[in-house]
Length: 392
Image 1 (tube, one colour):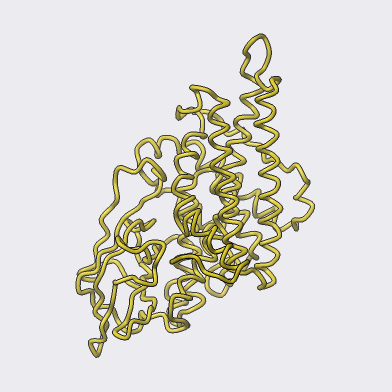
Image 2 (image 1 turned 45 degrees about the vertical axis):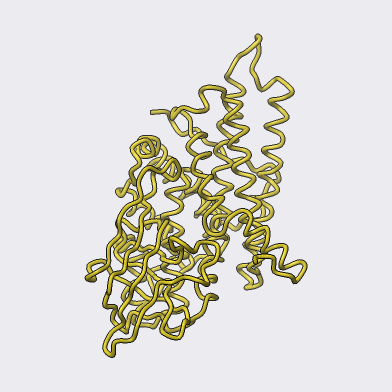
């Protein structure tokens, strides 16, 4: 088991833009990742298993809904703190960050924003500690980038709702205690429903044979005449805009998280370049390798500045969906390119589990697709700047 020697790059002294609280939150998360995630994650990824024992620790470092008010069990932190936590967790592994951000932005966020006071008090404190784990049901077998055509539906049966349909590619599904599910009512309007494990007709088969996010549990949500109590409807907002608000929060977290994966690949390649001797000197002394490293740190620095500014805008309530899309698309693309370049620098060693790079590279193939694909985010930006949607 190799020690975690990670040193975070800060080429433009961005720490000067952070408050003492920001740095304390980040450093606490970083120390936890080094202690609890790095020593075990390669083994769990190889076995395609999620390390459930880290759930309690994720809650303790603020990995679950750090921006949720303290009255509901959250830490009451700002959006930059949330981003920094996601950055540190994804530096460890994208799958672990997926578990954290789904719980935060796709389960706790909609309950906080759209739920009743009773729902908030019932679920949020337990979700904040990890006593309850949740998942988010929007994507369906036939509707991914086009969620407005989803077919999962519910009918009003008088004293309850009857839910039918299916969701797939759902992080946390196999072990989730609750699912925030988006379905159409009889008028075709999309609403959110809280579905609890144990409700008859609700099953969560696991998705196997993944080459990506192997240390994250992925599954389906199957609803076969599930009776959902009427008090489990999220009443605060309906329509596609409701789940899209949740996705904004999740995409924002991903924009920060991808930087963490990129930093880990860069730091690994930089250290290796100083240790690996070829032709009588460290490979870091050759021009082509320096070109790779120089481009990596440049792109990481640009991404850091982009997300910091986006965090300020989120704190001020000014960040737009299109701005969040730009950051998600740019930063994940940046990270996946850095992972590929770093892998080449390590040669054959880059494909082994002795180093984190190949695992990051495989994970980022999912991150570049979920929460809006690379191309969809490009079109969101295009529609925003031209005023002409090009989705159809």
